[in-house]
Length: 194
Image 1 (tube, rainbow, N blue to C red):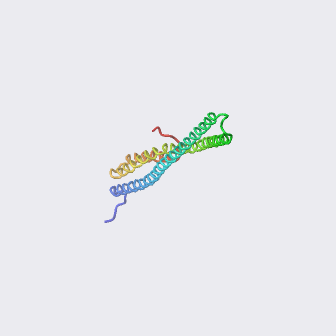
Image 2 (cartoon, rainbow, N blue to C red):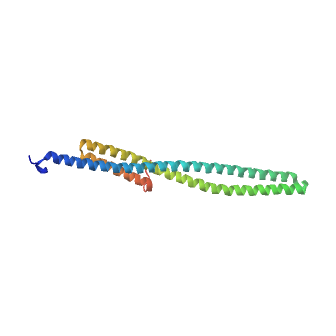
Image 3 (cartoon, one colour):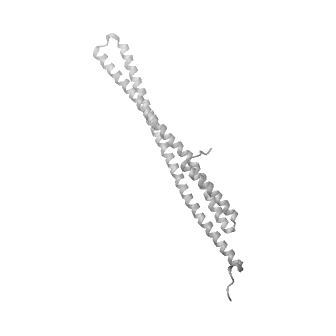
């Protein structure tokens, strides 16, 4: 018996349309998965950068504290040398006076050096804090993007099972929102109010 043209075979036409729909959704879902992988990488890197910058900032502030303690010790040593000079008065032997003044001068120079070093360390610590804050601002974008892309994949899969074009459209909306958040995570064009 000769085969009827496809137009006269509605079941074959519906099957072909269903296959095209399934292939289209499957291919789109694969694209969602790629964007999800890129998003995941960005989120992991943002978190690692945030943690590293926080650790480096903490190290710099600890170094700053050490310099502040040394600066204070030099200041106290200089004040003690001044007290000793004042207590010795004119009766102090010239060699002793010269030695104490030398020590006081060296302590004053140390105090000034520590104060200058503290300023450099503070600049570095604040730079690390800015890096940390940038990472903290990027990370929620990646988190929300991952969730939306995962939902898009699930909704797309359900759209195949249900043969539902509206569900497929909904998955596209979820994926688009996820992709935009991923892009914002990399570029940080808009800061999320988190």
